[in-house]
Amino acid sequence: MAVTIEFLSEAEKKQIAQAIAEAEAHTSGEIRVYVEPKCKGDEKERAIKVFHQLKMHRTMFHTGVLIYIAHNDHAFAIIGDRGIHEKVPDNYWEEVKEMMKNYFTEGKFAEGIIKAVTQCGEHLKIHFPSDGNNPDELSNEVVIGNG
Ligand code: CA
Image 1: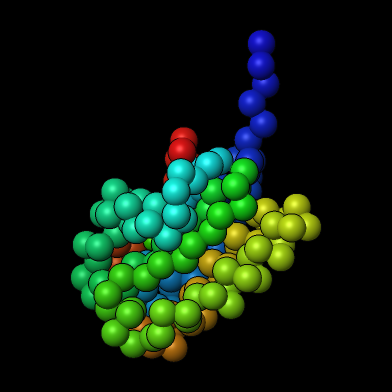
Image 2 (image 1 turned 120 degrees about the vertical axis):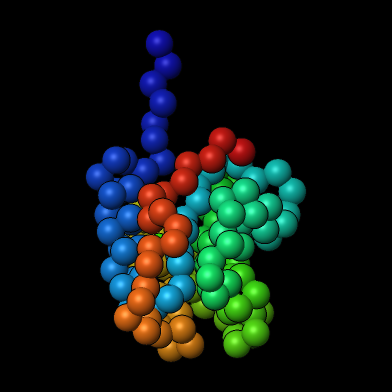
């Protein structure tokens, strides 16, 4: 019987969900992480598709941010909803993406994702601070795809 090696362990998935909860505590933004082995085609287009599949465009202030990872292909994208694009330039997340890539190159996958989540939270906090009424609009669980 073939043994499937999971890219992230259950414990690591929990740590990432926890990092998302902490990052979202100070911002009205909503962060999600989507991981799959392969990315057919352009990673940014794929990320936009996933963004809609996960209904991330339905947050109250359009402040959803998706961290998309195709780990076998080393393809990454970070995209934000239109509420975010109105306030920040397109390359706003490049720095976070590059940092995450460096961790991945060293084989530190969970750590890289957690750092990326934390940095996204820091960025979101600047433009979209929590006003106290801050419902958790999107699940914090990592989504595992089969692309
Ligand atoms: Ca959330």
